[in-house]
Image (cartoon, rainbow, N blue to C red; front, side, top):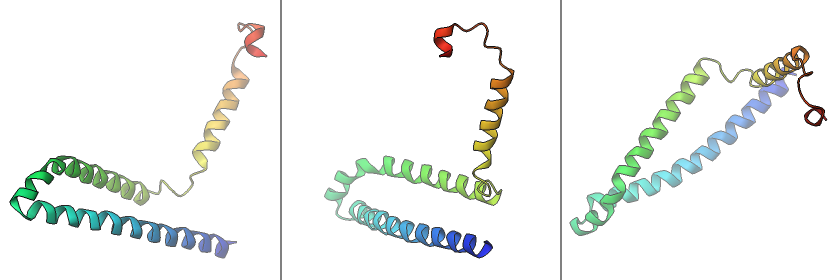
Length: 110
């Protein structure tokens, strides 16, 4: 059972690396093209300067989300991703058991 779980984790990690590799290549090539455009000819650079601020905002937001993902993984927040769902369902069941439904009309309860 542990070997099966380990194989699944390895397969998921491998797929993640492959997918992120393709994404990094696509974004990286476009980013390098943009940098060459901005640093290139003065006339062409002025036409591409409008995209600098949104691109920097995108990079900063992406870096923030990447740091948040790393922090969550380092603190073990992905070890048992099914537990919050089970807890919510258990609490909902407890709430339904303790709620007095006598004050609701029959049309709502049907």
